[in-house]
Length: 324
Ligand SMILES: [Zn+2]
Image (cartoon, rainbow, N blue to C red; front, side, top):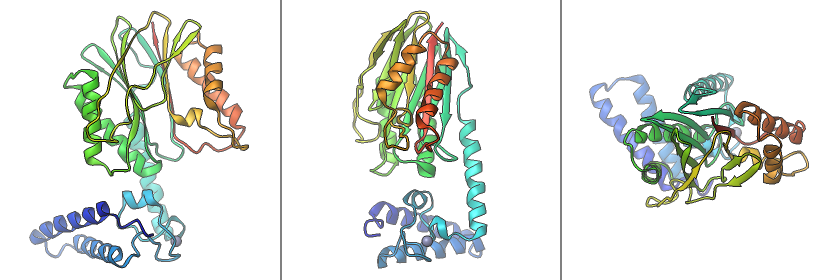
């Protein structure tokens, strides 16, 4: 794996090594710490001799997202021992329930808005970010998609969750909130990681400010007319200094804001065709008068019909927010 031993992993390991050394000065005989130190040293040796990231059994590349989650991994998924396999499954189950607990309340009705969402990972955990938060007479709406899939993406998703949840309390203008979140995301993740995101802020008069960081444009459903809210910025965390701008919309009673991730429009059936935006617009306009939960269900049903049993390979989030 020629390009695996990049600087970030080596630096991470050296940093971990010095932390272990510090703790070991107070408990020099702790068997777990000693074992970890040996494993970190072995990983550094593998980086030096160019075998880092290769499975010790088959010498094939270890899954990159597993290496990001555990830089000490030495075996590919196919060559874990039965005990390791079981431990991994249990870890995934725990991660999945932690992630489920981070989701906002379902069917939230607040400040004259009625919401519903569908959230499902391609595997046990998801790299999609879905949140609704009422703070100081505003409803914050977040739907995003972290680059990659699986465990590593879900870790970045929880990072975004914590970032936004803490930044919202500062009551910054929305574009500054997203700008600051982007900077924090950029500084604390690997250069290849970014996230597309819609961040909205709605009040009880129907006014919605929307900041779109490189995400699929949300749909604005007004009676039978459907508009798209254009992208207003680059994805989050692509560069440390990014500037975001806002769209401002006014929703009347019965109007709906519809957000989704690429797991919907880019889903592929067995013939390799994508579900696509056209089909989405069609199903949304056929069902535009339905309440949020029925509109979301109609989309899921339409997607399932299209897939006709083909497995979903991407995380999926759909959210509808209607002005009452
Ligand atoms: Zn292997």
